[in-house]
Amino acid sequence: MSKTPNMELKRTMSRVKRLEIRGIRSYGPTRPVNMTFAVPVTIIVGDNGSGKTTIIECLKFACTGDTPTGNKGFFVHSPKIADEHEVRGVVKLEVVDTMNQDALVSRTLLTTQKQVQTTTKTLDGAIKRKENGQVQSISMRCADLDKEMVRMMGVSKSVLNNVIFCHQEESLWPLAEGTKVKQKFDEIFGQKRQIKAIDELLKRFKDLKHQNDVDKGQLVFFENNKKKSLEIKEDLDRVQYKYDQGQKEAALEPTRVSS
Image (cartoon, rainbow, N blue to C red; front, top):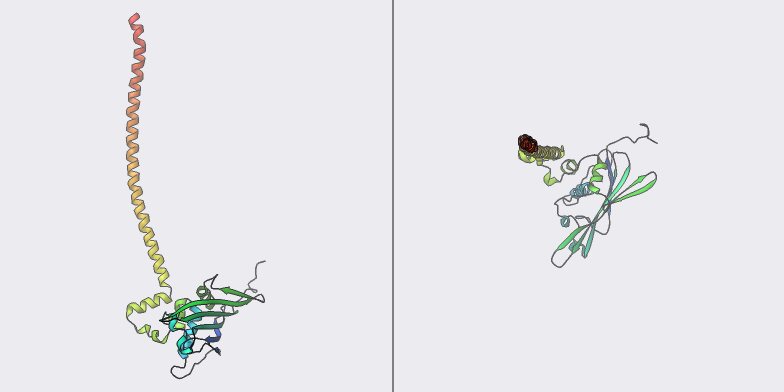
C-alpha cells in the first residue's frame, strides 16, 4: 500500500548527539571518553594539547572515514606510550539523520607495534539504527559506510571535510591562491562531477564525429561501387543481348543454307 504524504517522514537538519573516543591520539585505549553535544551550540574549551582538535578529527573520521593526515598510524594512540603490542582506536558517534532517525556509527582501527615500525589497518565499521522497532545493522563488509553517512547527514563529503569538520591546519584554504580556492569550491559545489560529465560528453562527441567521418568515407566508397556495379550490369546486359542475337542468327543459318 502506498504511503500518503502525511505518513511520510519529513526531512530535517541532521545533528550529532554523542561521541565516544577510545585509543585515539591522546585518549588512552583502556577507558572510553564520552561527550554529549548540546543543541543548538556546543562550545569545546580546554588547554593546548588536551584533545580539542581530536574531537573534531573523530567527528570527521566517523562521518567520512578520513583521518587528518591521511596516515592512520598517527591517528591511533601509540602502542609504545600505552606499553602494549596492539592498540585499538575506536570512535562511536550517535547522530540524528535527515529523517529524524537515531543512528550509531562505529569505526575501529588497529595499530600493531612491530620490531622496527608500526602498522595500522581498518578493523571494523558499522552503522546501527532502529527501523520499525528493530535494530538494523549495516557493516562495512556489505556497504560503503562513507556514502551511507553522507546520505544520512544530508551533505556531501566535500562539505564535511572542507567546511564542517575542517582541520585547523587546513582551515585557511579560503585565503590560499586562486587555483586552490577554485578547486575547493568546485569540490564543495559538485563542480568536479559536472566538469567530468562535460569532459565525457566532449569525448563522446569527438568519438561520434570521428565515427561519422569514417561512415561518410565508407558511404562514398559504397556509392562508387554501386555506380560501377550499375555500369557493369549495363555492359553485361549489352553483351547478353548481342550473345542472344548471335544465337538466333546461328540457329537460322542452317535453314538459309538448305534453301
